[in-house]
Image 1 (cartoon, rainbow, N blue to C red):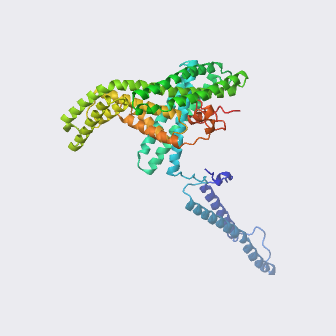
Image 2 (image 1 turned 90 degrees about the horizontal axis):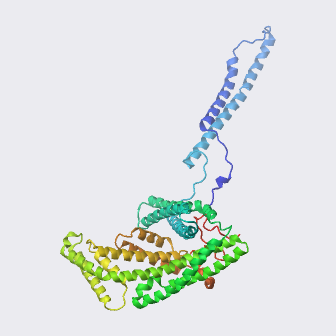
Image 3 (image 1 turned 45 degrees about the horizontal axis):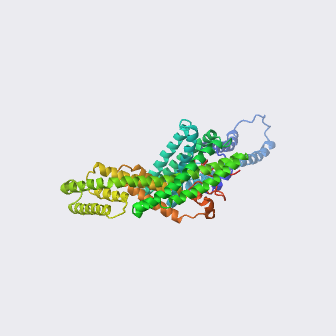
Amino acid sequence: MTPSPIRGRPRRIRAPLRVRVALAAAGALVGTGWLVLPMMTAGGGDPVPAAPAGPVAGSAAPGQDETSVTDLVLPLAALGAAGALAGYGYLRRTRRARTRTTPGVVPAAPPVPTAAESERQARAALVLADDCVRGSREELVYVEELFGAEAVEPFTHALRAAETELSAAFAMWRRYEEGVPEDAAARRQALVGVVGRCAEAGRRLDAEAAELDRLRGLEQGVTAALEVAEARFRELAARTAAAQATVAGLRERHAPSASAPVTGYVEQAKDRLVFTTERLNEARQCADSGELSRAARQLRAAEGGVTQAGVLVDGVERLAARLREAAALVPAALTGAEAEIAGARKEGGRTSLTGGELRARLAHADAASAAVRAELTGGPHDPLDALRRITRAVERLEAGRSGVLEAAALLVSRASVDATEEFVAVHRAAVGASARARLAQAVRALGSGTEADVLAGQARELAERDVRTHGNPFADGHATGLTGAVLGGILLAEDPDGGPPASFGGPGTRSRRHLP
């Protein structure tokens, strides 16, 4: 925003209006007095003794008349000057009153951003705040492992406060996307509120970043932190090999849609581990040579790589466990759904649906149940998708759900939310505000039927679209895992080598580990 040129000019101090009016009146009175004074003294007695009558007295009369006219010139000039000044001041005040609404000289008001500009600012603020929260949460795990929960309590409190602010900002943004409020001024104010909440989240984290660095003391030594990261790395390397076998088993036992949420996860985990290997080696070398600032930078990057590899491997293992649970739950869910369908058909008049709507939805629920029963005996299928279709069909009947159907809906929703969360976490440099906001709304909706599942599915679609359209200037670093590290937000892409690693903190401190 270009500053107003008025700000660079020295301001003249102006007297208040009543003072200027008083000065003008005083000038006019002085001029009037000067004019009237000769007239008041013209008839007075002469203190000098009178001269004898005669020709001398007669010749003095013309001289006196000439002197009195000359005495009037200066008072008249002073009075005219005072009147001119007063008139000039009046004209200036009138002109200023026509061109401004507030008294005094004030800087020009900044231009009001357009609705599109305000939306861009709000989107950018949401993404930045979410990235700060995610990066801070990741580093805090390593700090707690070394120093314990009690030592990191202030940082945990700051992180929770930032998460609360961010959740409120996402909720405001979702209402804005849905058209609430409708008034243009209120919508602008809502965007201001989104940006303000995000700024407060970042401020909470920034305020604790320096103290967390003092607790870690990486600039004094990284040996203990390196040992923690290396131990996690070795564990994940073994689990990644097992995850590859797990994905192969899922593809054999289930339909392709069952393993679709974790497609590519093992390959991405290996990519993060390649990146981590190089960073751990560099951190160890820098520590041995006494370059502790560089060692801390490389260590923090390695911790980010280990964290994201863990997210990917956890995702594979979690999905396999939930598919087993869903497969065991499908028969009971089918029985519960058929009972609900029969009850809705018998007591259809107690719902808000019309007769035609109820018949159509009953037919849809019957068809969904029959299709799932056919799949159970027809070969590999997707148990989570089977539960999804059953619970959604029954929910549309507006009948009370049995306990088994509520358990099935919650299982499906948690699986969907977790899968989307994993995808966003390891692609966060490319995922935009809309996908993140829907994911946050899905988390809030957990336990309320199938809404969380629907929202998480929308968030995943938006996130995948963002990744497909995202460019990556570090594509030539694939062999060392640099591309994935930048795409995952482990490195902040601020320097040619990928930039500093994301650290605990808000916008002002999260990129503090730049190379000197």
